[in-house]
Length: 267
Image (cartoon, rainbow, N blue to C red; front, side):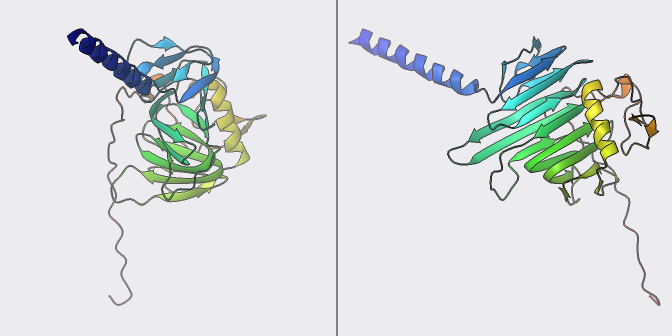
């Protein structure tokens, strides 16, 4: 009798451990494109693994693209995430229940440029797909956009859909971004028109990376010699790239200038 009890207990422990392992190793997306050297840090920890097409990613994993490398992930909700060269992205959280129409996705961009396409719209009061950076939190509603990271700023460029962009500074309200608009956080924190020239610049950066050849910085060249002042202050050397080893990134509040005092005539 005692032997049967021990066997039953060990069997129960085995299945409980197996269930816990399966729950922990929930694949929430897979690599559908890998170009060049792409690292996968399981649970954000070294050693890095060389990513391959069809490899799975799980919550807390970190994807890192090297120079001239590119990666694309297709997630369980059909969202598509593409990393430009020299980018670093964490899958902080990703839960999707199609039967209940529920999703909770949180991505954290530490470095570089990412294009995200959220193809399934889930009707919720609060955004169910979040992109976080060192200066901004971006809430998504069925959207196609770029997130570009600089030393002290985040650029969100929206091709189509709706984004809610909020600086990571207490007391500062967020702004709703509409199709063909971009915004820089923390400033100038005003929606601006996403021109075809800026869109082409971002598309090129997806292939070259921020330190790739051909574009330069400050005055990127677009097309046949046409130049324009970049709306975003890009890093001017590899030493100035964002380096962030922790999850979540450390948020440094930006000092706010005091609001101007307006006086009424005769006041």
